[in-house]
Image (cartoon, rainbow, N blue to C red; front, side):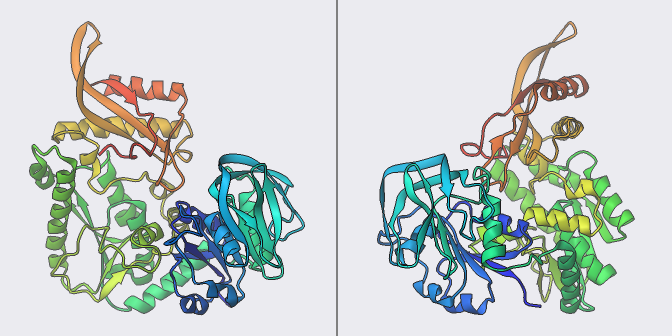
Length: 510
């Protein structure tokens, strides 16, 4: 049975990953590659269709990103989005000009619903526009398929050639029927059936891992995070006790995290797990260090030293398992480029003589990794574990790090996460955590004056973690968390909530 897959060609668009997610949601596999990908490579790829992303340039300007126009001769269905649509118009005999009036934000559009791209949709629909150029004329065989007040050709297509362009961003939620448009392109235009299913992926992945590793031995640095956890379990399903996982407790984990990792992966799932309590070692190295970059460097280097020591005890290792996922591949240089070496462990132990890396998740987005984790039987709480930085609480404690500060933050962060969970908000919020600031303020508890730390609570809503909005959490939830923290965590007398988006802020504080 021929594999169903779509190729997304990137012109520098900010939504390329989101387009990929939307395609995968329709049970169709996709890859993302740069627009400079040679046509010969595209032709040999066995793709059922192409999607061209948006981008910040003007297609008619010198130096604007270009795709080889020979791609139009392959006979593949093509969907261009924003800049991708303008590129299609420009290279099929149309004309693209600077618009008299730029169009940004959500605008109503009228659709021609007899086209396969818009079949079955409401004729009037809101769409997200973000453009300064517009398509003025169309080439032979093309017709306008949508219009807005400021954009007479908001979409166009050639049904016979199966080539379509939309000026708006149909991949974002603000375009209410965007998912339906993508569905129509994949199913009505490309003729796909939707065979990308996680249970089948798991079976195929396990079979391939067995073939690749054989009787060899593999080593995995298990952080307890969802990526490394799912990668480890998948490899364990394939090679069993020939996989050894090393879990390093650097003393900067969340409350009860080390015990949870031991319970789930060793006792419940029967994996060979070496747990190293190196908390004294790490906290000693970090004593008096306040610069966040220096904290990261110390933790990364020390982690490798500990990992090396444990690897030497294990002996010969053939493969190193990493939880690399598709966004890592994309961000390291869109599809097919060299991946930033060993990003999960911060560097590779030099003495480990391995045949190669095993990266079983490198084709998956984060939501697909979670889905795979559930398919493999990993407990739901672990699969939906909150993202956690490699340096751990070291970059959520502003200023110097002490064991007392770590303890304070562990308790407060646990309360915050529990209140979010109790309110039923855990799945709605992209990330939530607490930050212990280096600021102390005056307070009063009982009849006594206090001078204790300020704790900041952070919660963001995000699709891809590249941008984020602060979460509008009900005041009663914030009040419950604040009251419980100041009453139950000695040393914290004031709680604040961060209402800054990304940009201009980042999700983490350091």
